[in-house]
Length: 288
Ligand SMILES: [Zn+2]
Image (cartoon, rainbow, N blue to C red; front, side, top):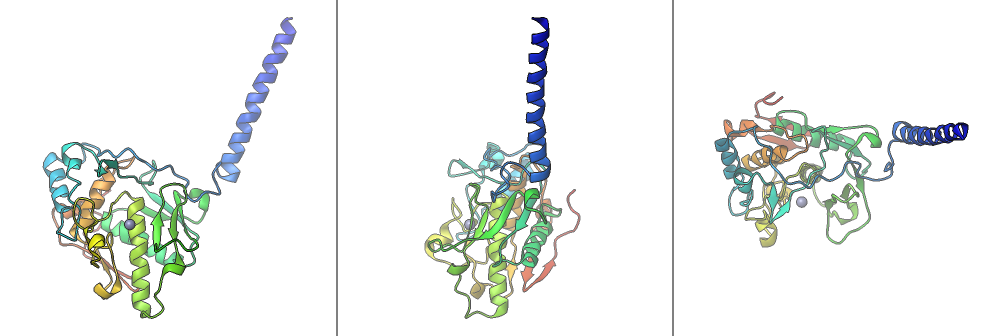
């Protein structure tokens, strides 16, 4: 009787051990149970703003900066300062940065070259004043994957938030009549735009939903709104609104971070991408 109890206990422990070993091997060598998916980090949908990084006055100043103008900015982020909520139209603004506070991207797109993806990461890092986007060389190390897909009605690119990653639709781009510079700048603007969504930034085209420009069919200089090279011959230039929106988004992450706080003291500073060249007047090393 006693002996059979011990045997059973050994069998149970053995089964538990084998299960653990299988799990560990999968995680360690195969790279997790969802290695085929394009989004490996779960979408963060809490929609809350961390306290303690800015004074109430500074937080209010950031939300005022996001207002912009009729076709610029977003007028409904004020509750970030009053209710510590990061929402749009009553819905949490999602991000997929993950728990380490850095967005890791893996590029499988052929339409967007890895050099262009690296430039987009550098663009966001300059704007933030610290590294927040990193390009990794293995899919399993990424929060999400940039890739191309077949035609989808009228869409150039899309941040899915639903496991499909960051998608571009090369067939929808009609750019063969543009100069090499304009083609490159437009694609880069789209990359920067979609990465902005992954960081938790909404559209910044004016009004309560940032959608005024799109609704009115107006092309802007704002890369988080309808952007076209015809209005932006000098490339993709950031604005005060972009920096303030990034500062708020950083406070909504699972690991909240103080980003782009230079905008409170040097609001006119910008970062610009033009045909593979990045220039910046943003104070360097302003965050840690
Ligand atoms: Zn968008």
